Image (tube, rainbow, N blue to C red; front, side, top):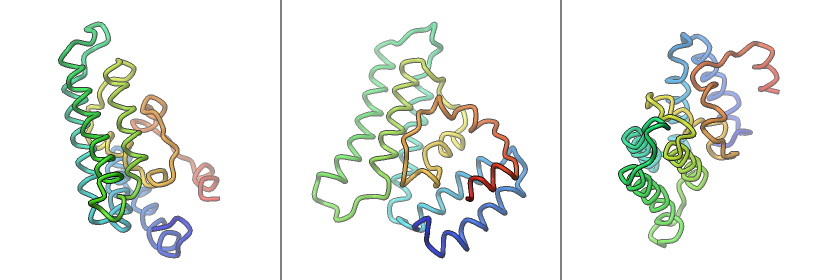
Length: 176
């Protein structure tokens, strides 16, 4: 679905915004995550499980890897980081260079580099591993940036994912 398409502008976006704004704030990340999955499914239904697998694998590995900065990084954390990066870039290389697929999954390069930056930051102790699967999924799959970018570091949006406020003025500015 293209952002300038009739389906997006007059069907998906209004329906999504209505659902988002009538949902209590504590459930809005779930709405954003599910809306992003719906958006992705509309364009690339056959690859939605690949996107969800990326969220799941990196969520589990980051949670397993995370130690407080005082604990330092050990061999176990380094092995887990390598495992996550091999999975992430292995999928990217498979789809881009194997010749076994005729079409690239939508946004695979973008979300591969974004999730890789996240697990590296967790490994380095820059950010704690996200405790909420939905929050990490929201970060990785957010439909307004999934196919167009830019790559955003997790620490730059961590606070907004957890507690953001929107005003009618900001919403109108964003729509414009």
